[in-house]
Image 1: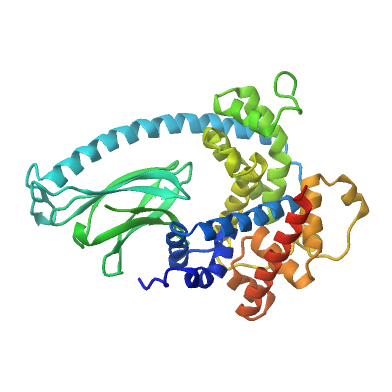
Image 2 (image 1 turned 90 degrees about the vertical axis):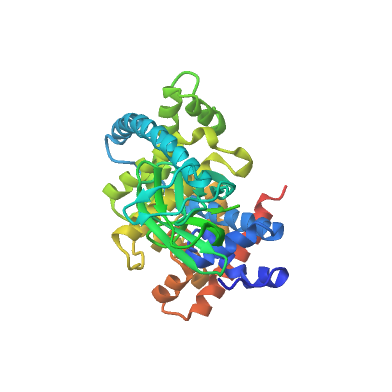
Length: 224
Length: 190
């Protein structure tokens, strides 16, 4: 990925993207670049907050309207249904997380040689540690990523992203700047947990991110 | 709503009640915000059924995440409106992948030069502030800002919908945002 230069020049280059970021309409690589820049630029963070305040103020312009009859009742029903589904999803998530933790431990520390439908794979060295990172969005933790050091490397990702349901794509950014799409999976009521092999080795992976069908980055993680 | 969650209770206190699972707080919160959230959703999606889905999904998110609301990052009202706007825009994009120009009454009223004195009389402070700031903009900037901020159109889409070059759309949004920021700062100054 060709990154713009750091410093004030970069702030100027990203100023228009920052407006779209504040309005929530920036997607894809431009959004990632802005996110990366914001991590190290307090001036642009302040500018973003100022722009977001303007955008938020304008939302008051929408006139109020009376919802259809029964709105409250239907909402309460949905809340109750959601509580039941959420409790089920949470139980499922805990069991998947436990299984994922065991898998990462096995893959990352070479407890045993593992055979998959791709044939025999090489276990990682006993000293190699899995690369891990926290999936975040706007500073909020939404999940975790771990990548084992064997061949192939395996990615384990767990996500808890509110109540959003839909298909998302997982991508990793490599040290040579290329992007590898690891796969797509489904978040149900905000939860998802999955394991997939990588084409690249763990040492090449610098970051991971979740992208929705519009190309918008839902969350990203720096791996170390 | 009678009892401990009357109209005098602050949004933050109400949300704290929601966060600890108080059903009365949930109901009071829904009653306080349902007209505003539904109105915003309806303005963006244009269809009452779809707007109800959006408003309900917004409430579900807000109520479920009440415990993580951070008052240092903005008001409860702003938080709820932003969540609703984003959901409404997502819903429109799923239904209409190719953006169309909004033709609803809300859009036409917002970009119009004329104001109804009756409307002005019933505006809350927050609405009045937003309206006054928007009125300072030339019509072309106002249209670009409303399309981008309220309807979630990208600047490239603004250019297409307004049939103007991309650079012109960028300028209109940039200048519009700058003027709005200045106007809002003056209004909020002590």
